[in-house]
Amino acid sequence: MLLKLSIKNYILIQDLEIDFSDGFSVITGETGAGKSILLGALALILGQRADSGILLDQTQKCIIEGLFSIKGYNLEDFFVNHEIDFDDSITLRREINQHGKSRAFINDTPVNLSLLKDLGDKLVNIHSQNSTITLNDSNFQLAVIDSYTGIQAEVLSFRTLFYTFTDLKKQLADLEGQEAKAAGDQDYFKYLLEELNLNELKPGELQEIEEQLEQLSHAEEIKSSLYRVNLMISGADENILSQLSEAGHLVQSIAKYKPELVAFSERIQSNYIDIKDLSNELNNIEEQIFVDPARIEYLTQRLDQLYRLMKKHQATSVEHLLIIKQEIEKKVSDEVGLAEQIKSLRVEITGIEKDLFPMARYISSKRQMAVSEFEKEVTGVLITLGIPMARFNIEFHISDSISKDGIDRVKFLFSANKGMEQKELSSSASGGEMSRIMLSIKSMISQKNLLPTIIFDEIDNGVSGDTAGKVGSILKRMGVHMQVVAITHLPQIAAKGDRHYWVYKSENDHSTTTYIKQLSGKERIEEIAKMLSNETVTDSALQTANELINN
Image (cartoon, rainbow, N blue to C red; front, side, top):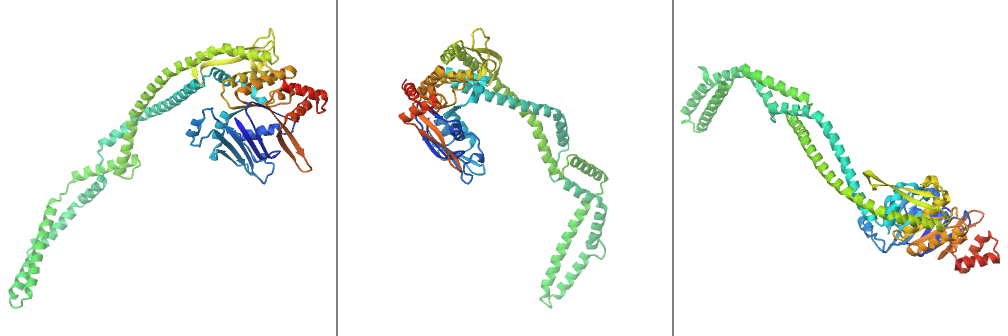
């Protein structure tokens, strides 16, 4: 329920604050005084978009704030799910600066506009003259029946499952598309993988082959050089080892005369041993080197094979080829995983589908059980509202396919005159009749205590006289179950309000400003008398106004 509305710097409103109560409240005032401006401001804290054009003073920002009581409307989960502090009273605030940038708050917590609108939709329903357009919408018609039947929870559970169902079907279609595309590539991938497997790639192989080929290509040169070195060290008549041995004996023979030469003799002996070991090792290496044309040919072919694979896969090394091989293996194995995912999704979709249809049939049965009583009540209210020959019926069609609304397709049919064929509302009801039908529907839904507040913007469109009084009575009865606010031009409706607010404007040489005040008993009689007598208040008009209020 809306407790207070505060508006600053909005169109014609400089600074305004209104307190609201439960029950039925009316707002009246001259045309152009700014009644609809109030609704525009309220709509902003309910999530409507805004721009800088709404600012009265372009140097200041616009601030609109609403205080709501939400006790008993089961909104705790909304606040918990969005991590916002919950209380029985909450504040919605909207700020718009001179650049058109907007900020929204719930209980001083910054929120995005969609979240503000989501909460606003749960708090207030604004019924304007254009709202009757929704009466022709089949989704709205089903929602009306669901509200009247009281099965919103069941419909919500069904719809949640249905959206899961459609999401899984979309996933399945995507995977099947991937599978179809992959199927055309799999043979090629398998061929590539088989080719790479047959080549038995090894890390470092390329460098190893290149080094071997380099050695084999120069085998004769290496072998010849090593042979000559060995000949110089130990093989010729005059070689290094024989000369070093002779040098050692000579130094040793004179060391007895000069003791410090003993160390030299030992060093010559040590070098002799090292060079002899070196000669043996070089000889072994020389003996292991063979001129092998067959091996050269094999390694050359292997190297060409590796280069060809690298070029084919645009790889820079054998190691890179091994990485590419792993990627191809994954693509091949993914086909198996894809098939398993598709199989699992199909099983899940089938299981959900088995649950969906029983749920849809249950919801459909509940709707159909309520239709007769719903038709009867709407028709009864319409007759009360001055359409004595009104006939209102709902055409039900059970579909073989399922949608977010279940298996039901409905049409609201209406006829205002005896002998006239019932047709869809869009082609059978006038603007005034549409307003009365919408009022009839909302008056019944209000009894279900589903929404804290409903605001009617000129619900009196197309009605007058006794019918206007009946509209007022219906709005007053709605006010027993919820907060109802009506903007009206009709005294018969204004007189039914539990509270009466008057919107007026003040003008000077520079500006026009809108104000609102709650009327006292005497002021209220005078305002309704003005509405009855076109501004010229007569004693008769005052008496009639008093009677309307007291009756």
